[in-house]
Length: 364
Ligand SMILES: NC(=O)c1ccc[n+]([C@@H]2O[C@H](COP(=O)([O-])OP(=O)(O)OC[C@H]3O[C@@H](n4cnc5c(N)ncnc54)[C@H](O)[C@@H]3O)[C@@H](O)[C@H]2O)c1
Image 1 (cartoon, protein in one colour):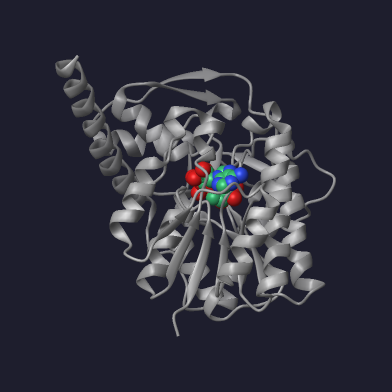
Image 2 (tube, helix red, strand yellow):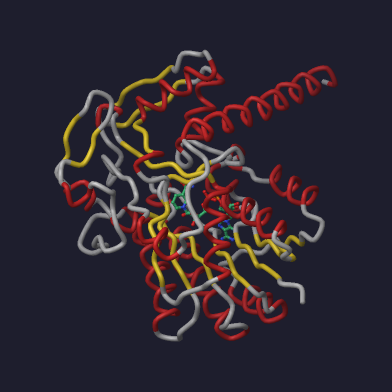
């Protein structure tokens, strides 16, 4: 029997990777994406190039340009499709953008998630439901861990966090940003539909999810954006913490691989911290050095001596729970490979933009 996957945010970084991955596993794919990223971030966030790529690359791909805030449309879509799995990646994904669009942020991240959960409960409650959550649900609390300053990065100075942040870390009583708060609401709802209704749901609390298919912009997708700045000779703004703030980076295909593991052996109401772990972590300064070594171009940047509100000083995920529950899964793309892929992808995309601009100029 054909298995069907409903992937929301299908034109985003994670959604598009999941579509390709599940299609290779034999699923028929229905993608939901209203290109809201272009509304949130302007033309640079436009994901139509990804929709084209999906249409060309996946024979069975069917696109539904519906907004997940449209409850009736979502209830009807899920009722008619009764998908075998649901992977929910659609979101307003920016910590910083949320403060200026609080209704759009909450309606998308919290209410949109509820619309999907309830639609699935009514139509196909046995279908695994994977939700992309975020490490921002921990709010600023990771910043209260004792730190030590090294030459190019901050690191934990508390043996309790030698392996990174685990899922048992508190999400309560901290400053989250409006984005973090709307994602907490979605995250807790997804857990509740697992615990209360027994549905096979899980929340993946992402660190820095990245890869060559990201339309990185200043407000979201730091690595993709940083590399684009390097290649274009644009100035990158470093906000506080001496540029030594640490992120753990995971390739979107490793994210999709984990989602597939969960789908094949689902559990109920689970939570996993999904990032690159210590091995794939880097500070902004270290990221500059790595991209410079690959592109041969100096990184231009300015330092603003004020951190983004609630920004983590040092965050890397403790991957032990994921590996204990799904021993077949592990990180396959080390940091250097991730950087190389993103550099190559931007080089290709930017040369196409140049070509297009030259063609337009000659037509004009
Ligand atoms: N990229 C990261 O570093 C990161 C880190 C932690 C968590 N996450 C989470 O992972 C998920 C996917 O992130 P991403 O990086 O792929 O984001 P993305 O912005 O690349 O993709 C999200 C997609 O959802 C679509 N979308 C947004 N609102 C919509 C709506 N109301 N209706 C229909 N479609 C809508 C957008 O157009 C976009 O294509 C999000 O939940 C995000 O919060 C991402």
